Length: 116
Image (tube, one colour):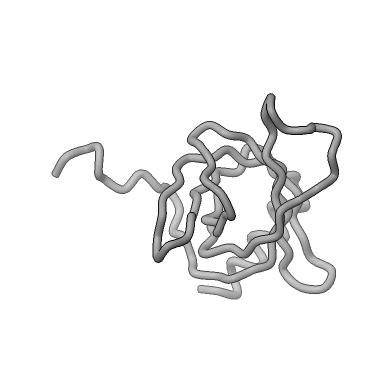
């Protein structure tokens, strides 16, 4: 098997549709804007998430990302786009978490334990 196509994930992604919102950072974007794009997750792991995105994003793009686990539980983090593709006529993107606070990591781990 060609290494280029081998699975690179360390952690198992678990299917999960959660409310999320993101804001891309880049030269052409207004970095002072507080506008976030609402979306949903496709799947999630302790190291990243797959998101439905409204427009193409590029490998290496950085985003501010908030994922909600219910009324009061949410993680707020930064992520880097690892890939983006069209699936079923929509864009989806694999995002790796750049940094998670200790509390956010615990919130995420608690949520993931309910999916196993």
